Length: 425
Ligand SMILES: [Zn+2]
Image (cartoon, rainbow, N blue to C red; front, side):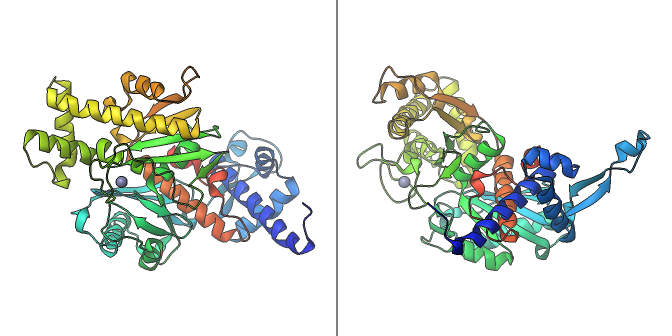
């Protein structure tokens, strides 16, 4: 379709914004680099690189240094001028809100971690969104205070949390982390922090992290399944995060696997999560053993004890994990039937509970798919902890920052190389 004359200025602005982001990413990833190398790596013309880097230096985002290696080697001629990101240009926070803790990372503008802090989250079932926001603020302030810094110095915050979250509007329709529904959580956080806040479903952040730094690097289509306190999913289609046609889809944990089944935290019955997530396993163990295992502060310990009992041959504990594995296989088969994926990545901390991805579970998944005989999807396991999730959140915040100062750019950060691949270094 031909471009109307009235559209040209925004197209041009969009192109310049994209070039600016690509150049910024190259400078950040290459650490110290010459303009000629930036042009080579990005494929952007030398003239455009010169023009845009001049802006970046004038704005204080990038600084020029002399090539020390060339000087030391006694190289002739004028020393080369290199560019590097000014680490102190911005301070960025990434956070993950879980039902039992808040994890925070602070990074500088060069993508280096400045601080890391974990704050226990008290009694999530009765907390309000305002209380969780306050608690998040406290966690970030604690991380900042450890470095002699304050909230006023934060440029951007990225937050991931479980639940039905609309990343574009910033609304949380439901989360296990607080009791209200349909909360404009991003507005609440923006007023709390006084700087731009990016919000997303935590499993989406893991999918982005897998795409940017993990097993999904260079892969255009894949599904990430996370198992933690709940069951999450992130879908990457055509190199871009797919959040559902209206923004809050891909809620794998709340697909139904049992008519009138177990009660889920979302309020409905029969959700996959109500059979597979840690709280569901501990709940079932409590009922089977006649013990109260519902205290959220000891959930992990109870789960560890249950897992150890199953490994030691306890029949009740074994049956609980075995049933969860069968439910999970059913859910996975539904995913395969809907998406027909090439690659499924099981990602997260709870992946140490191997019952969920045992060969038996994967065989059952294949048996339940509608095209038996066809090559099953590749399944890969990626065990990583909170640090990666929050760095994904920080990278999201950094990209939002790049968007806000690159006028005219579209909101398509998932499609691009992250602003800070070095976040995972
Ligand atoms: Zn549910």
